[in-house]
Length: 353
Image (cartoon, one colour):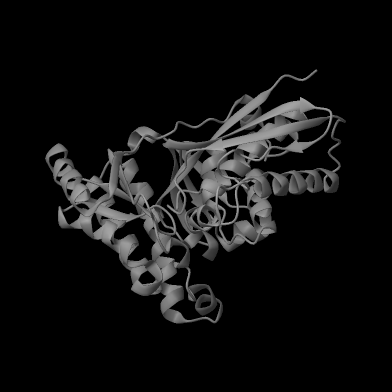
């Protein structure tokens, strides 16, 4: 009998270029070791998706507890995510003549990724589950690394989650990744060109987030429609956002961290101009402002809810930032970056493209 399989997938930080990944742009992202999701697969007679004891809670002591729970955690836990990736995975294998062995399993999951912080908590669960399925069915060598982010995104789209490929690429590859989502690549290949970078190129970074985040899901506003309608300001601004990732890659390779700080700030400023303060949310803007008041560079990690910060002046500036966050009621912690976790089989699927 197959032994238990367990995979961990990490939170993600969009470092530069987001949200241009859904506009044929470019991004740089990395996997954040501070937070993760774990999925465990155990062989079983029936196929069982195990609800989480906290995230899929359906038993309450009172109606007040139920309402409070829904207001803080929402209606959905991870069960639907696990079911969706099972469906997408099986459908992909059928369509690509990948034979799956017989046998069932039970999926369990756990996560410590804070909700509504723009750190890709949902896709981390899906990514970890996909890895379990690849190993259970022994088909990792048949599904290319570049394709896996598409499968994760498809599972989330099944549930009406609006997102791009950037997060899923970072979670599949691990480490620091430069991504080019140009229309030419997307039309020809069905995915972008993803280039791993040395994580040691990153300077010390910090993460700021709120313990009780609010309105982080509104950031996309009507920008997508304006882009599709051909509004010149949105099109030109999104191109500039994409170019920030290209410039950022050069800045990191050249260890030009002064330029790197400028690019981080410009990324947020462009987002703010395009989306507007009402869409971004006052708490999210406050997190960026707290960092900038002490001279640090800062921007959203994703769609809002958390902020990545670079303190170019070193420890003394970090101390000022820590004090400012404490006064404002925000949580701050040093960023830990995950090294790439592609294994030999994954690397062979890359070389076969």
